[in-house]
Length: 589
Image 1 (cartoon, rainbow, N blue to C red):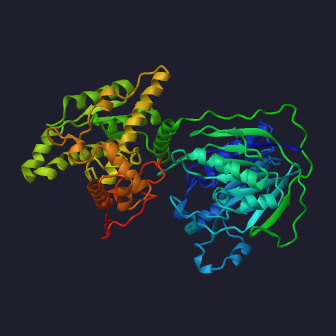
Image 2: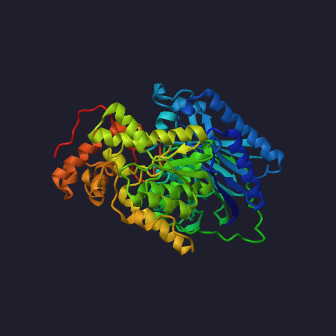
Image 3: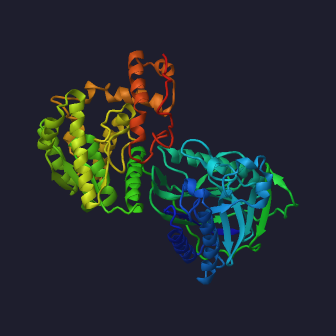
């Protein structure tokens, strides 16, 4: 059997930075060549970054992307990499034949953009594949942004037929079966598959199933990094034709996975014009028909260690924040530190993401702040090394009250808004990115002050339910202990009952059900999108369900004005769950 040395580049591109992304691909190509690779595969849309949303329609962006692919081909040849086969993901525009085959030309997006993968070797683009299945669910709007391709690309390299697919193509039927019908020995899949909890297990099962269906080895290379609300976790995978795991990259970091694959020799002949498998036209390109010489020393495949369920969620939050700060040009972050568990966890995440010298906390005690709230914030700063300043708000609050004479909820919310003015003032003065510290349970029920504690440019735990906040805090401390480090989160911050401290003796349970009950109801109503009656049927008290559902429905206007934050659940507020603000629909029991 011919041996193919394959390099899979798990990369972290920046959306819109075509030149920077191209340089990163060239760097990986040099590293792949140094490792003796015959083929280098990059993730989906790596030259442009992903997702590009409505940038896909812009003619100038499409033209820049197309020019970059040509420039990449020339660079690779000029730098002695012309014999390396590079499969690179990028934005392009639809081929004439694909446009003609579309049943409704009125549905073609402006400038007919495509999510494409080009095969480059010898200084030329020798083949191009356009993504066929365009997802239009969850966080994806690709049917809106791209034109589907209508072909299967088979490229023969070293006497092995290699089929090309892009991400959603293997989540749907068609391309893997077409690869089987075309007798491919390897299916390479370029991916921009965002993280959500436990998705790595789902992906491995999918890759194994598609490999068995296609009767070929499958190499799945994924993006890594944060992009606005999405986090890409990497988790590049190679399985054999029986679906057995061969190699796997680490999660949440860049990697170049290089391995030797023994693959069946190409047996299929060139297809007759117009040949289609499973509705896809077959295009076959021969780069090299002769097998490569056997390597002098075979590379042993590696399978990277996995994070546990809590660890991977924590790492996703860290990476999401780090890349949001880095890619948007911020140098530091600032947050209000109340001594409560939410802001304490955000402080720990920020230090892990950026380093303590780039994290600034502000304690804003009021007349009703407890002593432990102030001391817990100080203890977090001592343990992590972040900078902590104290700006008491009593005098500012009193000045407002002399003018406004507020009482009740309005008086409570005034305190939160005074704090927000201080944070934003410091942000404007020093250039810090303000972090909002609200959790998903609060966001769901509207238990936050709009233009108060909800202000900020990024919200690291907006997709983390309150019960998970505690679990992640305990996990982070335990991880520190295992490594012989000081646990960053004070035990008292974890143990004490949560309180907004906007009035004497206030507790969250004055306004909300216990969080373990609330989060279970929210899981049913928000994550799984059950109706109120279906939630009750799961055993919850009808009055409780009605109360929670009403809170959720009425808080949509607040959620629309909340900062972005990393998605880690199956259904986040924002890209996943989209409901109207103005609606008279109410769930009935």
